Image (tube, rainbow, N blue to C red; front, top):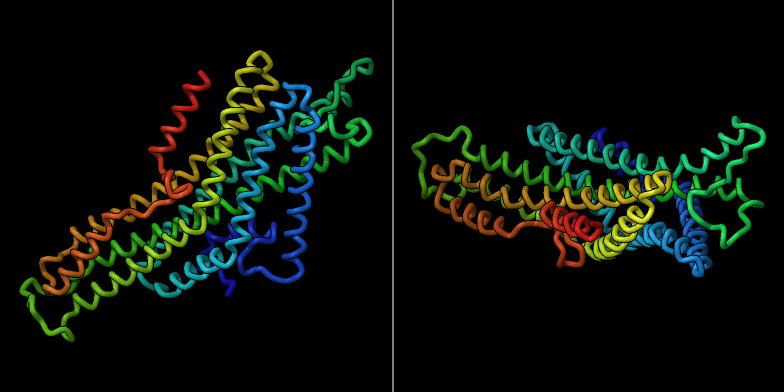
Length: 386
């Protein structure tokens, strides 16, 4: 099955397909695109790590090289987790597709479509922030080339690369191949991060949409039923009980889906969060150190902003999942439960009790990805930088 249930998922498919990681993708082209990704990401990481080690004697250059290397490890954690858990990632996608088919042509599909549209907006926002944050890094090497071409003949501006590798290889001799490679490598890194993170956002959006569908079904549980209702009807005639049983099944299904998202990513989130915290500390330090050199500081400001955006957009879906999962109790209380049979009320009580245990995304099962923790981390980093 490779039919998108909604056109809003098309952009996520394009991102993952471009790097050979779309779950339904197969064949030679998938392997070629994935090899292409590994080549540019791997060689870019080699140059950055090798350049950092070679620059050990120059402490300023060494410290300057640390943040890009840390980003290499973040990307490695993302791609390793996606590949290792490829079967689960595909199961999440297949479940999403089946859910859309199950609700096709009903009011519920409109709700799922609203969340899919919101997921597309998050995808575009995330991609825009990621690609936009790299603009200073992409522009800096081009500035000396342009100035040398249009400037006075007796003035020469030193050539620059996006990242320091001059301690590892002869930059003057291989400048243009290294520059072209750094552009492709950086774009590969950004596309990798955007593709993987946004598909996880889509999975979370679908879980939130499923909780919203459950809320709609609960609020319309007794549509068309008279006020004068028999609280002890025969089980075969108890329509409210049958409807409530379907709601319980949907609730259980959505909880399992949410748990699958968490189980697939909590180890990866732990490594990513740990490395991101270290990276933010270094980039904040470098921003302060280069406060008197705006042309250098702006790169670290963009880098720090990019890391904060990543952390925020990892915390925001976790907050959404948390809020939607606990809102089930509110949906149940707002339903016309007082018109249902006694056996139906028991199911409602069980669902209400279960919804008190919220679903969440965590890093290592101890750090909960939500906006409260994101704000706490941001305040800690601000105090350190001050």
